[in-house]
Length: 315
Image (cartoon, rainbow, N blue to C red; front, side):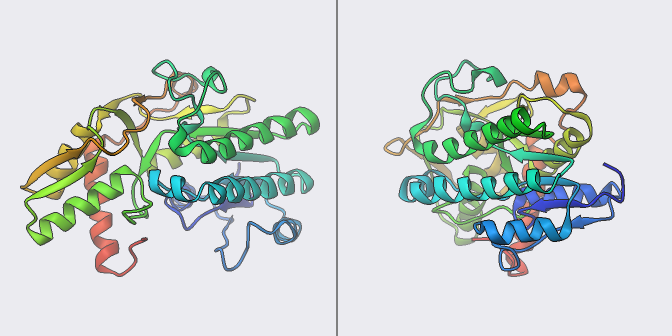
């Protein structure tokens, strides 16, 4: 990419897409194209084709997706698989037709088997069964990876894929029914602090281990891969460090300043026992995260307060 390349970031209003736009802007890229959902319906093949034909982007970041937590995936599995399949198919095919120089598709670490050996290397994809709590979303993301591979094999397209670990950061969704674990915890602990509640209840036993990456670190890795990596195989993006949900809850409690008790509801599902990405491939290429979990949580909580106070909180 050069500073005047036409760069389209799909999903720029979301946490990941907005972080990619910030990263590109900070690095001096001058021609970044974005469209809101009202301006461009990514579910419409006709609209996507027309957009690509008109603007002819050189580089495309696919950060647009329907995302959510365990409850959202359980209650709306058809929405998760259908909408994600359509969005990624429309963008990837339009990129081929309009001769995009390079595309980066963002997947998710949930593509890996539920009981995959830890830490998970890229090669364990499709070696055994998926975690049932987000199976439909995972299948859609696997399809996106395979689309990039297929267009590369058949048409020679330079389409690459990156698989981030669990993400959090500025612009996250704080809907308690549909959000991921960190924003849900931030909101729960903040509300409990404001309401002087004696306890905060966390789903599950607290024993599962998870890895977390701040969204701005992910964005930096994405722009790095767009400039450096041209391989067929997807690349894991993470920290290579994991914590238990109990440790995470205690850290969020500390950052928020909540003085009450944490209760773990063992009647609720834990999900995958452990999820840690092997990031040796990415590190061997030359990228490593810079934001620690505690520092990231401090920034995320500050962003939550700012968004809440300004009425811009995503729910």
